[in-house]
Image: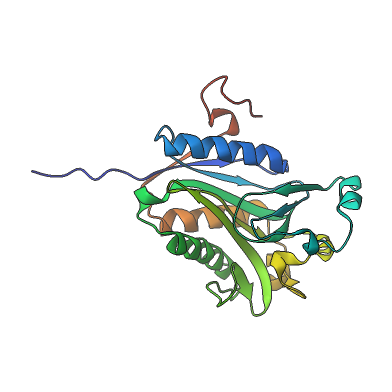
Length: 240
């Protein structure tokens, strides 16, 4: 008697070039995670850029800000407690963000293996541009080019379902990092794909490479692209 292998299905939702407010993306993640825990939604990958925001992970603290938070808010920059692992970081235009909301038990991945897989996805995409990046750096998370940080990882895992994810600087305005202690590391130099490649790189193009890396490394058989308006049942959650 033959046994039919269950397909691994991944929905990909690309929010396009218009920056997404962090609070909106967080609400979408939280709802998808709940549905995934109840097995009412397949694994879903959100692909987007954020409008300018500083986020604090579980180890983030007020001391990571070099300027008063009030002055940042007056400049129109949001500040959010993210509920993910990690410290304090910046998200904004020119940075590709991927939020996989995935059932790790179904994928057979432990927390460490999952984080390392996410790092490998960024390393693989960087390699397309001749950038020798590396993850799994002792005592550090994320992806580095020599001693310069190019990509960050911060995840939340609850009941076997992962949310939050990765962010990699493509053409990000790095001056925003001067307002914080990035990832809690003093004198941490931040870099971008464009800076390391010495060439212009489209955020969307890099995003496609990153998604392909994730699809291959996490062994999804069936990938479905959907618009934000089709993430949820009609009337459940209004999205543009």
